[in-house]
Length: 470
Image 1 (spheres, one colour):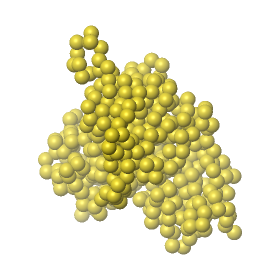
Image 2 (cartoon, rainbow, N blue to C red; image 1 turned 45 degrees about the horizontal axis):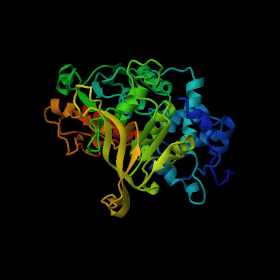
Image 3 (cartoon, rainbow, N blue to C red; image 1 turned 45 degrees about the vertical axis):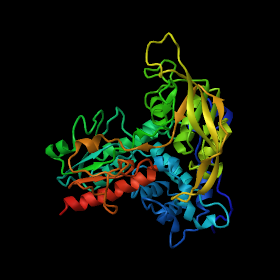
Image 4 (cartoon, rainbow, N blue to C red; image 1 turned 90 degrees about the horizontal axis):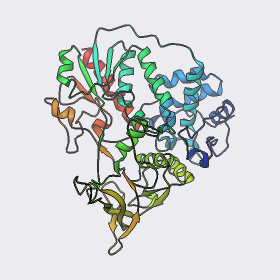
C-alpha cells in the first residue's frame, strides 16, 4: 500500500546560524530509512505525468519503484539511462516547477520529493559503487563539444554511449561550466561535479581545458582537425548591468564575476590569488537564483549585512522558494518594490586615476508599484513619483541575468544569432544555420536552468547521431 502521508519528508539541513558562516553543503540528504518512506508515497501512476514534466524524460515512477524494492543501484541505472548528471540534478533542478509540479500527490498535499530521491540514489551510487564505465565500441566518428556545462556534458555523454569519439573543449581551467563557477559550494559541492566529469572520462570522452573556442581555435578549425560535427554549449557569460550612473565605482560587481571569483578562484581563502571585497554592507540587485547565491555567498564571506533589492513584490520572485527561504533563515534581508537609480560613491582626490573610478558608499533607489501585466504575464513595475531614498552600502552585486558571449559568433562564418546574441537553432534538432554545427543551453536561450540545458544537449546528441549516420 502507498504511504498516504500528505507531506513529503523534510530535508535535513545545517542549522542556519552555523551554515551562514561556512561553505559546507546546506542540505544534508535523506537517510535510507527516509528515502524508503518517501518513495512509498509514489502512486506509480500508469500515465506517468511526472515524466512529461522532466526535460530529459527520466522514467521517474520506475526508479522510485526500485527504491521501494531496495534496488538502489537499479534505481540509479534507470535514472542514468536519460540523465548524465543525476547527483547534480537532484540538488539544483527546480523540480517544484517541473516533475513535481505534475505529481498527482500534489493535488491534495505535497508532491513526492522526486529531486530528493534522485539525489539520494546518486549519492549512494557514488559513495558505494566501484564499477567503472565501459566505453562503447568506437563507430569511427569524431565530434567536438564546446563548453563543459550541463548541455555540453550531456551531449558528450549521450554521444559517447553511441561510440563517438568526443572531445570537450572548456575555456576555463576546470571542467563543469556554470556548475563550478556559478553555483556555490554550499548548494553544489565541486566534488560532485568532478565525479560526473570523471564518469564521462571513463566513457572515453576527452576534456581539454584552457581552450577558448573562438580564440585558441575557431569552430571552422575544429572541422579542419577532423571533427565531423560540433556542438556549441558555451553558456551565457556576458553579464547585464543596470545602466545607471556610478556603475564604474569600485565595489560594483556582476554576479557572474563575484561568484566566479568565489567559487572557481577560491577568493574565500585567507590569502587568495584572486581577491574579492569582503565584509561591510552588501546589496544584491535581482531576484533570481543567482541573486540568492550571490547574497548567501557574500554573507559567508563576512558581510555585516546583506540586502536583496528587487523591483517587484515577493510573489513575483523568480528564485526557487527553497533558496529564498534558506536566504531568509541565514539572515539575508529583502527590499521589495525597490529599484536602484544611481550608485553613490566617494573619490579620493589624491588618486590621479579616472575620477569616475571611486568607491561605493551608497545607492539611491526609488519605490515601485505593480501595474498591468507585461508580455510574459508578470505585472510591470512602475516608479512611484517623489519616492526616492538612499541606502548605505559598500558593495553592490548586479544579478540581472546574462547573455551569450559574442566571441563564437564573431569568429564563425555562417552562424546566425538573434538580437540578444543567442544562437538560432532548429527547435527539434538544435541544428544551427551552419551545416554540421549544433547548439543548445544558455548559448541559445540565455541564462536558464541546468535541466533545460541538459534537455537541449540530449536533443542535439540525437540529431548529431542521425546526421552522421546518413
